[in-house]
Image: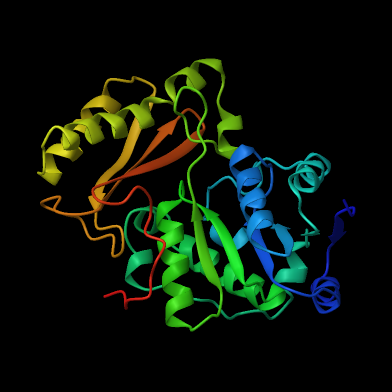
Length: 294
């Protein structure tokens, strides 16, 4: 296996890109890798001739008072994991490489970015959409890989790619979980032992609602109530939101008549955690977006 190359400049990426034949699969990350990230790299390795990843803690997707400065970082550890998973090139730029002085342009993702996380974190998806579009322009990948744990992010990126006619296939990959159901996240490292024991309550809330759906419940309000009830039983969890929404538009539903996205957010100690499940006819966030999203 050829050793992975790490570059810190856009010029370095473009030099590499021009030197290789075939398709590139891109895995954008903020680093501090876990098995979820590694699964994206492995999927990209299986589906492309070359694999590239980015490691960039993007300041534009953090709001005032959020955890930009304490977000976990470990470049050497991440480099080892990227390389072991089959990554050919890692792009790890400083902030001024991605946003040089005078950089003012931003990408607005529209209505799908205004709900749920977008409502609680104003400007977050503007930052996500902007950095992702920049990365697509830098790498020119055939495919880009994102985890379904960040369901709304996946919807937003697909919307941006569709609306701006960006020739990149967006591949959603299943959420990777700990043995107790907790979705893997870099922010899990914030949790102390007691908080970590409490954190799987998010998954329990989702699976309880899923079981109600499997038992015939189709009232979205009842599924929301069930999720809130499970979360409220955990004293360390502070509920932010629970949602039962259309997985394409993120409009809240009254009745679950087809594929529906169950999602929630809760604060446990210093960590704000999110999770989701899809119920209905499909098992994940829809991957085929040939039709126009309305």
